Length: 316
Image (cartoon, rainbow, N blue to C red; front, side, top):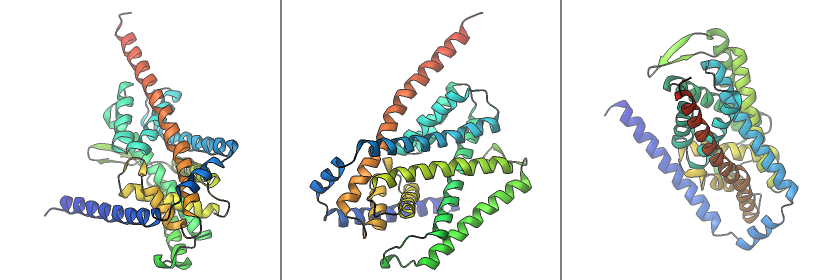
């Protein structure tokens, strides 16, 4: 059996294992849920709290759009910056709700190609965006684990020292990336036929800043909706852990993954009904509302692209 098939089977096995674990957590904790408590918790939210959470979610989306603005300078296309922000917003919203194949890839390829960007440069944009997103993730997760590691259940068999060691390892990965950029920026290498140039150190720093803003803003949004007894570091670790889980289990909008991760990490210290109410509210402001806006924006971008094509086809 070749290496590619072994890797594919390994990914499938890991996905099945993680999905079973998430399903077990949700079913096990779900049996204890009081849906009246969930409804009462949702009704207790004040309007300004929901608006603040929505605004922070918007900040996170704009930070992600910044990945594409950075890549615009890297690949040298001439699409106006507001249009780039629109394309990135649509792609990220669909990515979160439907999956990377349709959102991060499909919508980006569709929209960028409609505005005249070739396939190779679109692939570079996507690669740089993914790199930026996870570089900032590793940086923030490493800092939180090193400075203020969460107190996990005894059944997880991970103490403070182990979590801090993991955090230090993550920070070393980020430091290695920065040193690599400082030493090899400008050098190019083809990956599956697409040329990628090593970013400069300032570019890598901008990637980390934007990605950190994204993850911090989204973590702040869910923190506002959680009970006051939950610390910001615990909320952030739970949210970022659900992001990792979404990489393994490819379910639309991370359904079950977000809930299972939060129940697994915070379920021992927060009432399950109150916790699920916070996650439902978060889904509304961070997933559903931006998706509706993104679909409307997508239709406008498509219409605008068609008009530009039609105008270019008219003889001067």
